[in-house]
Image (cartoon, rainbow, N blue to C red; front, side, top):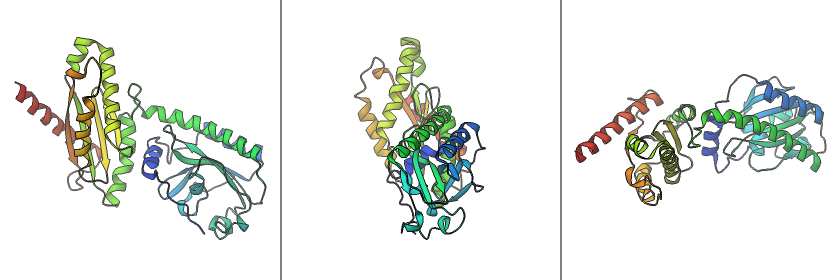
Length: 320
């Protein structure tokens, strides 16, 4: 049996998946409607919306199957998320990658499989809409296009789920989205002995900027700062706006990266061409996760917030 390879963007893919806050949620008619229609149109035993987590595939919607998840190592969908196309196995009994797979040799007795990737709001392949049957069958180019159309319906529903976790103004994660990702990422890093650092940013002089130039300029400043964070940090780091002029970044798995990122931020800030660039700076509090001190992400945020205010106080004293 061939286990599915890990995608090159696995860390970002998992962050994108968990930011949806959909794993282990209750069944929803909007997804079940799609799987019912696809099962009927293709006349197969099973149709699933399968979301591929770090060590399992979990079924947001399932027709014709009692199990709610299976291990990722035996999943067909783990293979299907590797490319942007339909992944089709017309007869698993004759395919050396799957002929001895326990899902083939035992329940649900997979002979035929066809899966098309479904995506997060960021376009990451987080799972599939898949068809399964206990008889071998052919799958035409037209069939693949139809499956792609059904998968697009799932994408639309996933996109609507993502909207509640995205800050409307800056288009980065909001507090809710950050909490959802961090609550999954922190235990994962702890289990694998990966360092975690949180940086808490607060814009200096933001109220004065609003008072002098108006709220439109303030909104522009918030959008520019969000872009500055995205350019300065890695796409695997979690960047969010907590509210107002407060932003946070969570870094995992690389020592001292935040030093380089902040240095890069200062260089990039000089290139910001706007009517507020000379009036706006930031204070930052940085804290490394310590399991003896921090029980959860809320503890980390409080610690980083306190250090940010200490940084702001030092600067204010320096200008007094």
